[in-house]
Length: 77
Image (cartoon, rainbow, N blue to C red; front, side, top):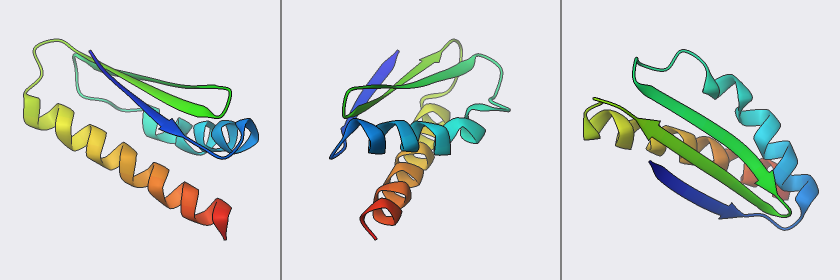
């Protein structure tokens, strides 16, 4: 399992980012799953993989982090 925590300025922003990422939590390769949630002003990602190449896990994580970066930029204005 890979866990990543991303700080936001507020819990409202973290929750908004979670909602924006929900569509990314669909159509994963077999053996790969992702949970996205917020705790206070922190967004948390948990990727779990079984028999999935490391490159697939890294690619998925890279894509999700890019989407988080975009959502943070939009919130900042």
